[in-house]
Amino acid sequence: SSDYDFQVNISGSLAILAAAVKAGVTPILISSDSAELALSKYGEAKQIVENAFLKAQGHVIRCGIVWGGEIAGILGTILNLSRLPVICPHLIPEPILRPTKLEEIVVSIMSIIMDPPNPPELVSAGSSDRYSLSCISHELRGDRITLHIPVPLAFLYSAAKLLRAIGQKPPFDPDSLRSFMRKSKLDDLRLAQ
Image: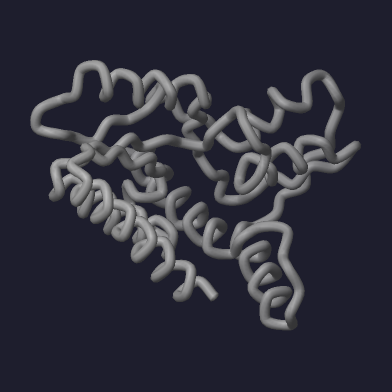
């Protein structure tokens, strides 16, 4: 359940933080943009852990959607959607994402190790540029002609929750979709201002 995952995310991260502090090592947390607004259980857990690391004089590196390494999570979902042969769902409202290359995270870690900011601070890895999900998906598809079908995020969220309720594994985490739904609305408000 998401409550169990929430507690495991927090307690596991805090145990690692405590061990680092006890060993006299400056802790570095690799976090996620989900912590910025904490619109999902995952984001809320990330925000709690970020605050604990900063309070303990640790460093926090916040990343967007990580490109490179193992293909899983949201990146895996985006890649799978972009590989659909003819039809691609166009999510409404459209999520706005910040891609972060794996190399950019490594550069951020090395920068903190070589020249640590004092006091420790939250560092955003990579570019601050944000892109719509359809823009990212289009780049991955290349020149293939694709029919975009509008699909409300709320519908996908409900379908994923239903699959989970009947004991099936949904192809994406409903908590991530809930975060997308709320973040998209906030992005719309920011763009309107």
